[in-house]
Image 1 (tube, rainbow, N blue to C red):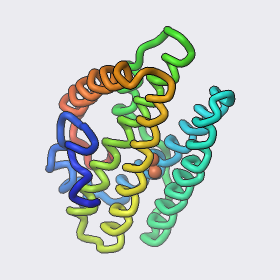
Image 2: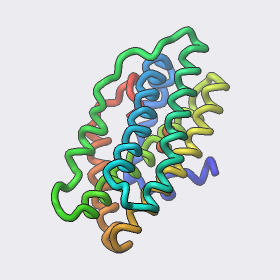
Image 3: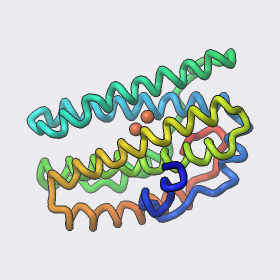
Length: 201
Ligand SMILES: [Fe+2]
Ligand SMILES: [Fe+2]
């Protein structure tokens, strides 16, 4: 699974600059704090989808356990901070997600909006998965390296959940066309984003 999770599986158009893993690995406290909030936002995003689309049975069924998983990831990150004598700290500005949100099309039908949101979630999962893989491979701390391996597997599953759901609410052809457009936009965002040691993205 490890080496299968790469650009071709996740579809990402631009790999993360390898310098990020080096500087992130030297700044574990900031990375863990930013990471904790990524997990919180992932759980909140699933809750928001469930309460906005309670009539979509498959969505409710697929995303309800994902909320628990994301929240358990949050708990695990808190545990890693605690073990190192660190605390959660304040939430940081998430420039990556803010830039992605601007690329989401407004308007259209309720289903169109849903597909946009699902694809945005899929993008964040794919990029997170790629970054966890980089941390797994580069981080010297054995426990954290293993931790990031487990999360990489879990986020890859979520990425597939979101894409699968998107295809239920619009034709596969339209969804995949839009997915490719968003992958291009995401690559452009990553290209222009400053490489920071204190951000997961
Ligand atoms: Fe997660
Ligand atoms: Fe996830």
